Length: 305
Image 1 (cartoon, rainbow, N blue to C red):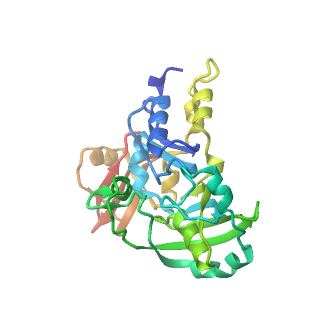
Image 2 (cartoon, rainbow, N blue to C red):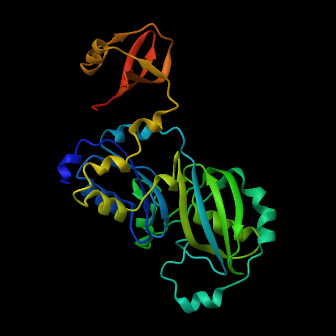
Image 3 (cartoon, one colour):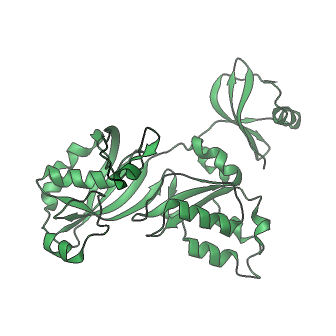
């Protein structure tokens, strides 16, 4: 199948990002596979984290700001015995790791978990993507600059121990709000029981409404999409519908004449109560996301589907 057939595709690709790739690299490769330039994503994953990376294709990029659920779920493993500036085991000598191994008490961690539930204050690592004066902290850190890392309030909605594969390792599941740094959480948990700890494995299992069940690898996308002749328009099979992320937004049906006026930027009067966010639909087609005030429609995003 030639890629130019995919230029008008609109929807969400949920990639199961593998280790070693940046989110930017994943997006670039997905763009080349699909053959479209209009691409965006939600929730960056660094090279040492794997899992759910939602990518918006085409007109779906206009729905990113309307995701109704910004929470995320992670599974992560704590390595007990040392802390690192990056919060993980990148570039750590294997012999040093072997010497650092320290048994971690699951019972002690279980007792202090309630302290980390709800809204808490967290100080992200200096090797983070948080911007200070327009520049990401990790760029300053790599140059050896001293950086004052700002604290922030985050929300931990759920935190539980899953298993203890080895005496020095402990695997947990966390459901949290946006802006949470799992590596910092791991270090803080260990510090609370008087130990040193860092993350040895980090995997995102859910991002908003998207889960691993919705996801697939880039390799599968490329292999199945371009295996002729059976792959006639197989791209559609990989897409989560564009309007799935808008499912909780109220719908207002409009007619053909109203749609034409909306697309020409004209003011539309309707007999409807004020509404901050509403979906305008003609039959089953999404026309726009808009708001209604004083009986008049103001469009925020118009879709070309």
